[in-house]
Length: 258
Image 1 (spheres, rainbow, N blue to C red):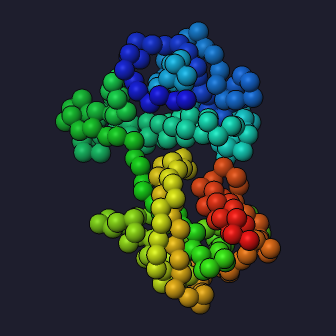
Image 2: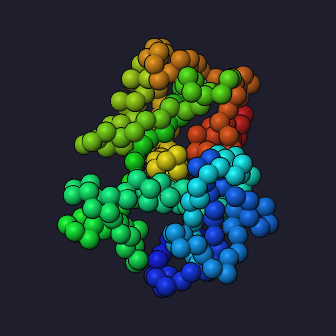
């Protein structure tokens, strides 16, 4: 379990370490990503405690041929997903906020929290989190799945989109569904959330009941969409994703009513 607290870690320079470069993450011990270090590198960033032991992440120059972060998601146990997600997001934040956005002074990290502070104007910058919705649209026992042009061949998934300024999650979901597949939706229900570190999304999962089955795809973000049942499913998202959890949970529910 990852405890995201920096209390007591101000002067700590040893413990678990996650090493990453621009293309991947180093293998650690026990088929995971944690390495035991008697002394962390100077540039290592503490991110909390893993099962009580201090843990930090370091971004190294070059490319070492380590497995990509997305590959690790399919290899690690679900309990380590928060560890990987936090490490990736903290590294991205530290890289993107090296200078003050107000006065361009080099930023310094505050030791007691996830924050960068400008020594000149005292502006603080925190890790960016971008809220978005992800929804499985259903109609009776059918589920709507769609293809983005970015997906691997044959893969279909749920609909998703970022929440715009001033929107609620529910408003964003209705807007995204209509924009991407032309459907009005009725009753909605919350499922669960997932921090998605590519690079800083916070995904809130919902189910939404469609008012009709008349799909009109936008042809830009969505290149294909259709209604499916358990007997004719296309290629699905990987098991560690919230989109797959939405689909699997729905299919279990329909199977239990047979």
